[in-house]
Image (cartoon, rainbow, N blue to C red; front, top):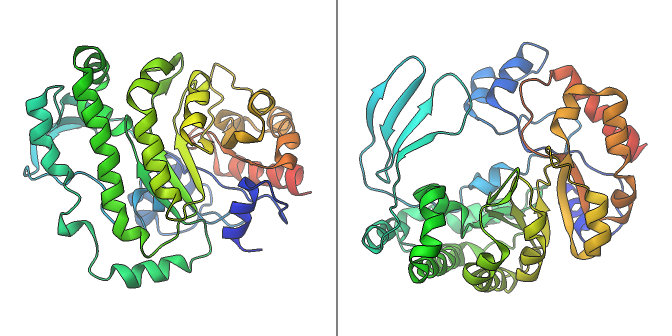
Length: 371
């Protein structure tokens, strides 16, 4: 059974030969630690990869780079025309203007989320009409000149074929900021609907040439719309702004052979699950356990096989190891056996986890699920 077929069979609820071990990468600081503890490979290359990887012997082939267009088939990002400008720098951070015009403060000492000082997109029609030129799907530099040949080679790899299929909230939130997009839903719902609808149209247009050549297995949707206390908007607002455009987008992908739609949101996601499933989402990721203690077995009982899950392994228990980790993994055996669930760490492995503890996790994973 190939890696690609095994991955698909899990989410089809079909028998597999063994359960593969995956993860969602590591912090850069984690890799730096692991390189001092026995991780082999080119240190410069590993650290340049940021949060990606590393690929460790005995794990399934890394699925993540392709969601950021690591396959090189398309540039789905806004293409700005502002020249990069560094505005200030200290030993701890730098402040710069990026190609979209946003002013960003970025740490130079740790792997933290950058702080936006001035957003690229203001919550006004004038700003949206100016910003939208960066989201022109017809820009020729979105595709490689040898797209058919690259697509043919990519279609032959032995890993799940994955692509970033869109973001109707998450990207707009990144460009505007949480406060601005939250107020926009109240202050100008017509403009909010227009933005969301355009984003759906943009992703369909930008992927249409690629989907002529590749039949992807998995569409990855980035939202990150939930925190420790729940979603950043209500299910009512989801249905008002996002449900119909997502249904349109997902139908477009399915009509072109995409088998699974997977939505990514950290945090306490349970209030949104019904909305997402009703829109056509198949798989939820990364099913963070968090302080709210997500119960994946209870969610499977509640939603049945309609809900597939990818994630759910408490990353902090990996560094702890021992009986607590064993009990945690063992608690998932019933839904692993049922299918439609692939347990992986519920986000990036933090630097508190030693390389030896992670290798011990892989041994425990295989003993419990494949022993």
